Length: 367
Image (cartoon, rainbow, N blue to C red):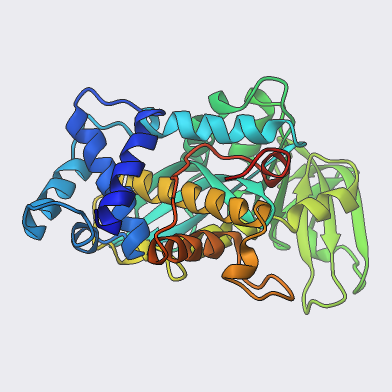
């Protein structure tokens, strides 16, 4: 039995436990894609097909994958929802769910707006919207569309804190959050935007702010229309050249700043999916719906590698593939490298698509 076949058959078995299709062949194809992405570290369909253990020609396998990503009856939310819900349920008991959103370029002339939940130094994918466009701001309606996919997945009674950069500081989205959720939020904003305080309008950047200090203004009207009130924070870290400005529903400015520090962790997700991992940006796909389906496989591969990396740490095996005096590799890299290490040495592997925090893994018997 080849390494590729071992990985593929175990991936197929694991996926059968969490997702079902009207056609068994669709599940088989998904297993091919996940195993091919992980083994080849490449999300390009032609590269994936080269890693699939089958007697069929690579071109035939590639055409099968192409039919899958363009199949209109494969609904992204229906397929991925069980995995996203399980991730949120697993993290709901560990404290507030820190949800972060950001956009990045994928494929040809397409962007993905991703919503993830932060765990340690990574963001785990929950929902996404793919659209045609280049790097830059998109519409508030599209931001809301992404959050609408997440809202029904949040466990009841969970606290949620939403993080985002200055693209998401729109009155339309803030009103949606106020009317449809009980979430807190911390969003970056522009110093050029005007706020209303004590019936006077001024640009945010006009507030006096000293380096190394934080200022806070409660319940100011956001924008000159002042349709919604926010808490305004000016934060100029001593190590930074310029200050940043935040709007938040939180009353404690230092707590809001601590939360906002975690926003960048979705960027590590994009790096793992792209240059440091699966090279999703080189998929050559140009259709938003096709890229969205490809993301199912790429995100499942990511969940597995994150779980695998956490398991390596919990098992005390990280020193076998990393430095012995300190841990240099990320959880994602530990997962990838352990798979290679195990396959070379004929060790058992077990794909897992049910996320577990490290705290749970360390209290359970590990393999």
